[in-house]
Length: 127
Image (cartoon, rainbow, N blue to C red; front, top):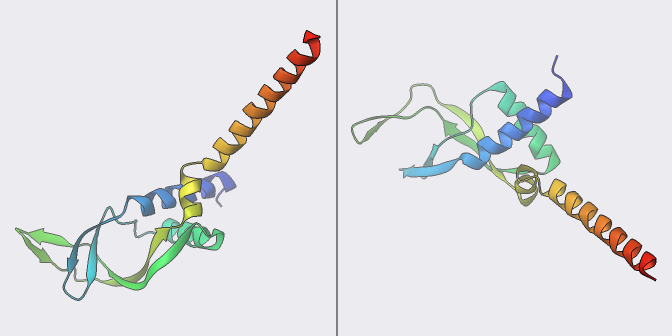
């Protein structure tokens, strides 16, 4: 059904969606209103659980009430349909995956090895 490349792309998109979230305001009862909230779709749930297994995200709140909040003037209009969904946050490993830190480390290592080889070659042939 899905190729491995498509799944990995969805996982990266889920990490980016989690990273974009921010708290806009806190409603009475200590309920945060999240701007740029993660999408409410099946692909996101699957990708977020994969990230959870890999240790790239952790659950911040387990049963957070979720719905689309609208405003009339400055007063919030609460949604009629409310679901309870987990809210995730990125771990250190998740940020590393998002910033592709591993690829940078490997690239830097390869450049350092090439530089060392060129230096040793130059010293060897200098004599």
